[in-house]
Length: 531
Image (cartoon, rainbow, N blue to C red; front, side, top):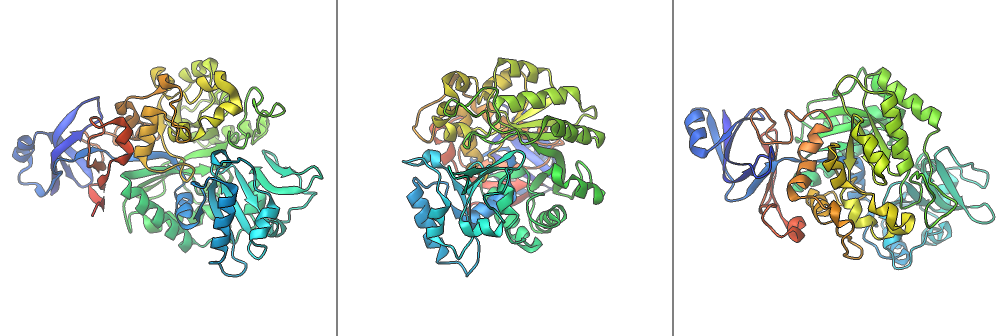
């Protein structure tokens, strides 16, 4: 016995402007679409319940193709620094939070971004020491490629003047070679390894909190990367925490990338790509090839325009990077590679071409921000999909022009060029780095308007509303080989729906992020309903 959904506008997203009057679902699948009268006539004896949309608009369920679900839960729980406008505001908020903590408890903040401060600068560990030396302090930058730490945290981590820079990272120092409390890319792990271990139960609580929020924003699923970061036995502990929440407590489709450092743990558990549980699926092997533009660690072909000595940081040596990709291929695994700078993207494309995947699964390049005509040409002939973050346009411009100047910036964040070249793309937020609301991402893809100065950047790269929504529906399904069962409202597809109070195709584009989620439906069940 199933459900008839009717009474609103239902976009199939199979092709532009295709609308259904009604949809019949049963046991988590779409059985048929058509007119209300047709479905009543064909399924009258099988309809158990009716869901009247009351004039609202239904889409295939939105999926975030790149976020950190546990990290988003941490952002909800920890001190959120992402909207603060000065170092002084950050320091004041830390002082207030310190008053709430027990002695010796870590003070953790998320999302500081000096590029949006009135006076951009890096906070020194001595300033954090003025907040507290009783509490170890760790503040994660918005890009999650850098942390700040006070002297207490550095002491616990064993950081001294003699601590070397790790491969793919940097301990920033002053003119006397003393660490200033600023750690880039892999050097972050020097501080993070000193954090107290987190329990499986606490992880489950963070996942539960995060998914509740994601469902309230119309997200039916997300591709996340969390399995390597939470202390001893992180893979098993985090995967089990996901299973404690999903299917048993609520429905949400979590596709989990597997960091190369916990690949052995996956193998030891006799698991592989696509396995994991009813609503939990293991995905590609995750690799970082470079850092981020904000901290000038994205790996570029040419120097940074505002740092003529720097081309960024390759996370791995060429030899080790090639070793990782060969290992993935020996296991039949696709790879998901973080690559922001053009040198990083170029390097990964060459390696994918050298070691092609022949089992139908799909590699992905995550971010793919700084590109050029040569890279576009090579991507077109490579079996790879791009995992892009539209909101990066709104938060990176105009300061990114200082990093790479206008000529390189004009060729970058080239979402429309990718699609017109036939390069498959999916979209996500990279939450907790950016706002996880998919409507914010859709608006960013359509308008490309900076949240910093209100200007539109690279107008020729603006997407249509249809193409922007497709990135969060068909695109997110395609990148994980689920395009024949997810991402559209069509017979045989999963009954995952995002129901909004307005029609995104008909409203003013400036108002896209103001639309409200009415219901989020996963596997035919209502997982969120606006009260």
